[in-house]
Length: 183
Image (cartoon, rainbow, N blue to C red):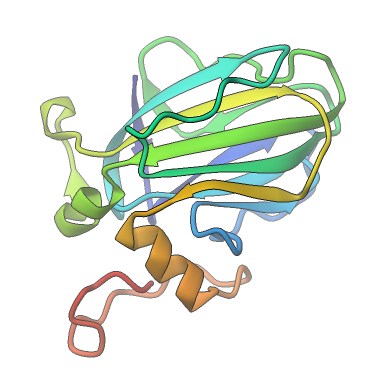
């Protein structure tokens, strides 16, 4: 399905979260956990559409395939037992990802096309989408974050920049950063 994003991000949000929804790619450059019940996923484009697939399972998925540029797992705590993607989807409503009620979950975020999306900055037509995300959630605990694949330039730039999660992404200044990859 197509998901409308803004300010280079979208969120996983629990209905009972008290966490502020701020921009953060975490230390991994893809997904930053913002507190119980909230996480930010960083996109390449600033505004517009990305392709999104979400899966809620009971078991961990197989290792990510080489077709993904980035794949990161994080620990996500669902206070209410109801969390989903925060964004405007073109398709059926995004369902609850908390398959086992309140408690700890693992969330694996896969991404590809962020570098191409970064160069475009705005995607308004479904036929123009170049960026794709797969989010898989299952009950479980574990390390705060596990980097499985990290090879896109957008992620490299965000990991190097270590952005302050209390600020929104600054406007790109291509005079200072000719690659335009650092936010």
